[in-house]
Structures are given as structure tokens and as C-alpha cells.
Length: 194
Image 1 (cartoon, one colour):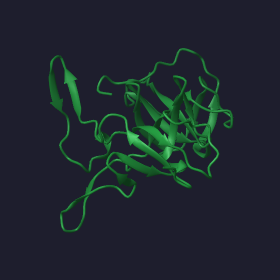
Image 2 (cartoon, one colour):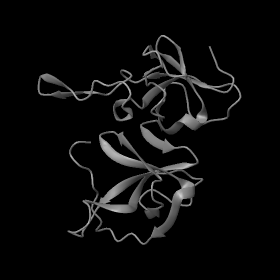
Image 3 (cartoon, one colour):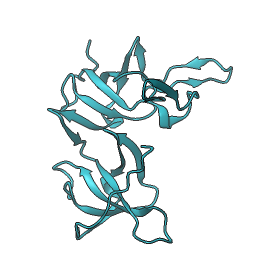
């Protein structure tokens, strides 16, 4: 089966990432279905759309919007699937619900997005993380910033993801405000809970 405008994907693993293995035990981190932080955001591409040109291939891992696999309760309290749900473990998603894809073991972002590593603050009076600044981890050829560039971005434009155990911010290219000279002594901020 192939969609006209939509990809068909299935979750990589289960719908939720709310279990952490510690030694030989499993710890349930969250039991609520509506908390977006524990919804799985990794999917495997099952089918490509007929009318959308893309470099994404069948079998690629993609990072998707948190509402793709999420379940919710309607006004009567009945648990429902997201609007993306198709059948069994398959979901229809559009290209704008995909932010990053892995092809040949290399993560690549889609044209409007880059992924940024937060930096550790050197100021003892500030938060542990330097606000609105980061180093580009994943970019693409259509952006004016490359991987390794030190950038600034607008407030509330960053959206947190955990990718390969590393905490990153997804930032729309329109919200990048400045490209700094990278000194090389900046320290990444990746707390142990991520």
C-alpha cells in the first residue's frame, strides 16, 4: 500500500518510551498516556508517498512529531488513537511531521530544521545551560549553517528531543538569529537523565 501525499510508518519499538532498564530490573518512568515527553518519536518508514519527492527511503529511521503515536481521551473518557493511526501498527504521516531521518547510519535533517546541542554555562549565577545558544549537530545543504557551527536562536523556538541518548534541540532555520565564531572551548550540556 502507498499513500498519495503521506508516508506510512510504524513505531521503532513501542508507542511510548516510558520504561528504563536498570540492571536486570525495569523502571516505569510514567504511566500517563497524555505526557508528550514519553511518547516514542522514532519510526521506521514502511511506504513512501506517490506524489512527494524525498531522499527518505523505505526502512529508514525517522524522527517524527510527538502526536503521531500518542493516545488521548475524548470527552467521554474513551481512549483513542491519534489522527495519524491507520491500522495495527501503521500510521499515515505527512512530510512536515518528519524532522530528521537516518540513511546509511547518518542522521540528516529536513530542509527547514537543524538540531542543536545545548552548551554548558560558564557563569555560576546563570542556569546550568547557556540560554539560546548551541552547536549545530545535524544540518543539511539547504541551510546557511553547517554541523559544528555555534549559533544563537530566538526564545521559545527550541524543541527538545533525545536522539541516540543525546539531548538536542530542534530549531527551525527561520529562528536562527546569529552565527558566532566557534572558539572550541564550549562545553556541551547533556544531563544524565537524558
